[in-house]
Structures are given as C-alpha cells and as structure tokens.
Picture 1 (cartoon, rainbow, N blue to C red):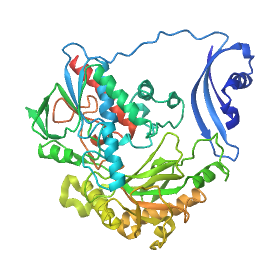
Picture 2: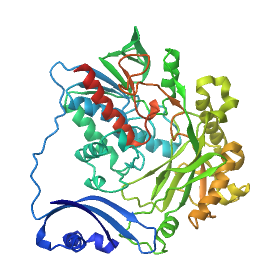
Picture 3: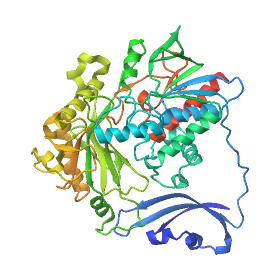
Picture 4: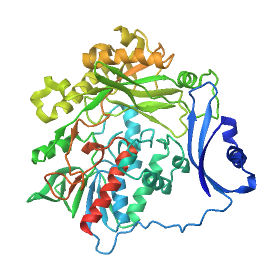
Length: 518
C-alpha cells in the first residue's frame, strides 16, 4: 500500500534523518515493521510562527515493498546522418533544446556569441576589477547565459507548461545536488553552475553535437518564408533543417535584425526598478523571529508584492547571502543584478524590487515604434551610468532617504564590487517608477518589520527582468508565425522567465521538432 503523508518537525528533528521512519510510523499510527520503504518527496520551511517547522512530504509503502522498476538510461546520441538543427544561444533554453534534440537522435549545432564558461569567468573578473564591459562576454552573454552567474534559482510556477521534474533530473545528471529534487525552492549557486554547464556541453559534444563560441549572428538566411540557416559576423554560413532562436532578453541586436528582415515582433509589458540590499542578519532575524541565527535553517529569503496606483511592485530574483553584480552588456550602461553561491554565505541579502511597465507608460517613446520599451530601458541604464560617474560605479541611496526624497550623505557597506556613489535615485528614475517604489517600500516595511530601515540600500538600475518584446509563434508548434522552421524560445522570445521555465521551453521545442521531422 502506498501513501503520501506530510510531517512537520523541528529543524533539529529534521536534521536527524535516521529517525524519519519513527516519525512516519507515529504519524500513520503504524508499527515500524509495517513500513517497508519510504522516499522524501518535498522539503520546505514554515516560518510563519516563532516555532519554526520543517515540512516533509513522504511517499510511504506499508506492508509490502514497492515494485522494482527498470531504470531506463537516457541516450544522448545523434543518429547516423542525423538532421542538423541550429541552436542560437547557449543559455538554459538553448542548452536544454540541444539536450532534447540529441536525446531524440538529431544533431544540435550550438552557436553562442560569447565565450565558453571558463574564458567567460576571466572576462567577468576583469569587469569587476577594471570596470570595462566586454559586449559579448559578460554576466549576460556567454556559455550558460545570464543564469550561470546568478543564484541559480530553480523555482518556477510554470509546471503546467512542461515537465519540471525532468528538467531538474537533467541538472542532477550533470552534477547538481539531488537536493534540488526535493527542496521547495531549489537553487544551484553560481559557484556550482559552471561545472554543471561544462558537463552539459560535454554530453552534447560526446553525442555528436557541435559548439561554436565567439560566433555572433549577423543575418538570417531566408527563402520563400522558410529559414535555411544563419550567417555569422565573419560571413560564415551555418545551415540546418531548423533554427532554434534562444538568444536571451539582452540580445537587443537580434530584435533589430528580426525587424530588418521583416519578421514580426510585438510589444509586451515588462518591469523595471532597483536592487535593494540589506544585511543578511537583518533578513534572518525578521523571517525567523530571532536575532540568533539557527545554523540548521537555510539563509532566509523573502517575497514581497504591493499594488500602487494600478501597478504591481514586487521582489524579483531575491538572492539571500548574495552579492550585487554589474550586468551591463555595452558601454555607457549601468545595470545591476544579483547572485549567490550555493552556500549563500555572504553577509548581504539583495533583491530586485521592480514596477510593472505597461504600454501606456511608454507614450513619450512612441516615436521608436515597436522598440519603445528597449529605448526606455536604454535611457535609464544610461542615466544610471551617468549618475555613477565612473565606468560601472552604481548610483545608490539609503532606502529611507529615497522614500523621503533626500540625498544620502553617507552610504552603508555594499557587496557591489565596482563600487557605489551616492545619487538622488528618487530624481533619476521616472516618477512613474520612483513614486510607486516609495509607496511600496513603506508597505513592505509594514509586512516585514525592519525591512524599511536606514540599513537598507538601493542601487540602480534593475532593468533586465524580462524582455519588452515578444517574437510571436504558433501555440501548438512553437514555430514563428511567418517563417517556417524558425523556433523562438526562452526569455528572449518573451515566453519564459528564469532558468527552469526557459529550460522547459527548450526541452518542449525539441519534442515538437522531433514530431515534425520524424
């Protein structure tokens, strides 16, 4: 007999896994000998009350052992004379599309504008040290995409759009901790992700796929409303049966190329704002109702949302025990984002706090047509660069001063390596953003006593939460509406947000391509 049961334990009890069978037997009112097997399915923290509990969901087998199931090994191998599928971009969407295609016998040809993850780490170190942006190798571009140097959060609400378990299993297969299969809010950590990305690349290469780094797409090869391939910056052509476009939301040149080729784009809503930083100890004390940290509890995070004048204001990409990083992709830009190592052991906590931007907010940019949202992003990134005054120095302000419209005469310490400079962000940001952020911060202070404080610091700007454009595609086939065999996927196509939903988009497209060409 199989049953599922949820048990609530103290952190100390949950740490002692050898006693799980005893807790299960007591909860089910059964003898220990009746429990023949059990598996932990899900683990989460309930910190709503002072007495913090760990919630554990088990599948339990009573009176008889579960039937043994034959383990099916996944083969990632291109068939002889396999059809070539071009995958443009080596972020989560592109890599999972390539894995899925290889699994089904196709030959994925992965084309990435940036460098491999090892060389990319060197450019990122130079960015932090010298504050100079390599336009094709940075926190956004390169093997693994923007997710490689982030917290590696794997939580998604998009489970109806694909097989989340399969996505996580493939991460584990390539070196991720099995804990991601059971944690309610799993994460990988930026220090763990590069080796996982390398392992995925090795699987693809060993199975017959190909990788081309430092290869930037300059043109699409089209004929009679079909895509035949792409051309790189040196005029080299790559041809394939289909093209999977997984270029990410920061590849603005791709949007302009699509428009130049007459391929339909449509504007979509997005969000912009700032990144907020607190001492991690403060967030721990707020969330865990104690000034003394319990080493058995995970580093505390938060999720906040408010409505201000018909706009959502919400936390985005919260990084407990993390640092703030420079995520610009070109000169004269300052863009901030967050990341954490697997241990989440930095003394700082940071999160994007962003405001929904609707099309009616962009009327002053209407002369740019479909690119109004891009121009809005670019203008705020330039204003942040100008206010920082020195390469990647970020404009910053105490949260309390920002809310009260005051210049900050001093700033608390920050994790942002290129440095911060006091600036009146309440004046630099458009009123539509600054006013809503000011009201939301006060509201968040009521929801989390201590959040709105002198210790809280805000940095500008958080502008790359999502793309302001979508590449329309057929719902059933995922093909672009006008061009056959062109498959726009992931965040850059406007159909995903985050590592798991992007990876699912990539894996889903591999299934549809296999259906079409088989």
